[in-house]
Every structure is written in C-alpha cells, then in structure tokens.
Image: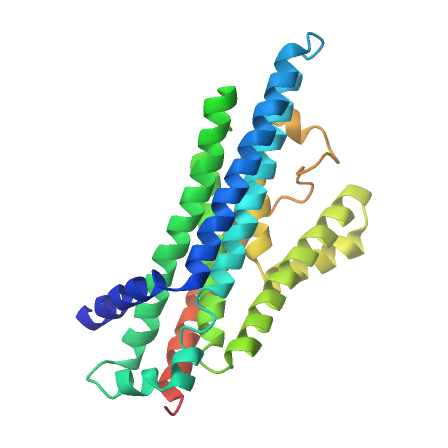
Length: 278
C-alpha cells in the first residue's frame, strides 16, 4: 500500500509540471467566463421581457445549465482520456519505467498508483468545472437544478471509466495509438447514444437496438444521459425532442455494467502490465 500511495503522490507532483494540465486549466477558465457572460445577458433579457413567464424562465435556465454541464462534462472527458495517455507507454519508451520497475515495487502498485493519482486530478477538474457552472447559475439567476447529488456521481463514473481505459491501453500500446484508441472508444459511446436517442424519438427499434449494443460496448455516454435525465424537472422532460431531452433513459443495470466494466478494465491493465517485458 505504501508503494501505491508513493506512486500516486509522484504522479500528482509530476502532473503539476505538465503543460496539458495548464492547458486544461486555461480551457476551463475560458469556458466559465464565456458561459457566465452568456448566462448573465440571457437572464437579464428574460427579466426585462414582461412576456416571459416564471415557468418559461425556469425551463430556459434548466436548458442553459444543462448546456454548461454538457460542455464541462465534455472537457472533463477529453482531459480524462489525454492526461494519462502516456502515463505508462511514455515512461516505458523513455526508460523511466525500467528504472522504477527495478526497485522493490510491485507492477500492480505502479499501475494502481498511476491510476489513483490521475483519477484524483481528473475528479478535481470535473468537480471544479461543474461547481463553476452551478455557482455561476446560482449567483447570476438564483437557480439550482434538481438532483445534482445523483448526477455528479454518474459524471464521475464516466470520466473514471475513460481514464481507466486510457491507462489500460498504455500497458500495451504506444502513446499515439493509445490516444487514438481511447478517443475512438468514446466516439463509439457518443455515436451510439445519439443513434439510440433518434431511434427512441422516431420509434425505430433497429436504431434503438444498435444504440444499446454500442452503449454496452462503450458505456460512458450512457452515464451522461442518465445524469442529464436526473437534472431535468418533469416539465423539461415533457418537451420531448427539445435540446438535451433524454428519450431513451439508461437503466440502473447500465450503471452497474459501467462499474463492472471499469473494475474489469483496471484488473486487465494490472495483469497486462505485469506480463509486459520492460
């Protein structure tokens, strides 16, 4: 356990010096500034317009909040994929991993320490981004979405799954190949989610089936869709084909599948790295 925590601590220390963390922080700041500015003017215009009812204002604020959280989720997804993409493969190529592996440290502790360190960074990034969105909405419009306590764990599970896939790929693939593979994995989830949504809206069973199969192969996007569903009050859900409406709601079994998928991928990553000659 001490070796695992030491690797996690070293991972955190190293991440502070990496440009990708600085770039992600700048993107987050720019996004929050743009979102806050847009929200301020949109809310001010609704307040000035006497024809905008309270219910209409709540619907618009809900949709704007969902848009902000969607962007925050997407930025966190990219960060979760790209941050650890060279955590193992890059250090193997540079010779750092050979030096580390020659010490009395289990290979499993190296993988789990890297995973834990990167997970703490990505989770902090997600919480700061979503917290910034929610704080902006509250300060500007005195509005708070429902079921945040149910949505945030699902978003955290999504980025955890993608980070784990990126770590696992690094045990066998080169940095570039691993990055392409991890982004492609999320792409399957993204496209599958939209195909399932279109199938649900249009009553096309074949499209729904294809989307469900894609979500089973790559479940991250299903976690976001379930989170978005929890964040919507019934009046927004009843809008049907409105932006961010969820026609095909993932079941709790999909959440358990995502948890199991993450755990299985992490186990495979540990086994794969242990068998790799360094």
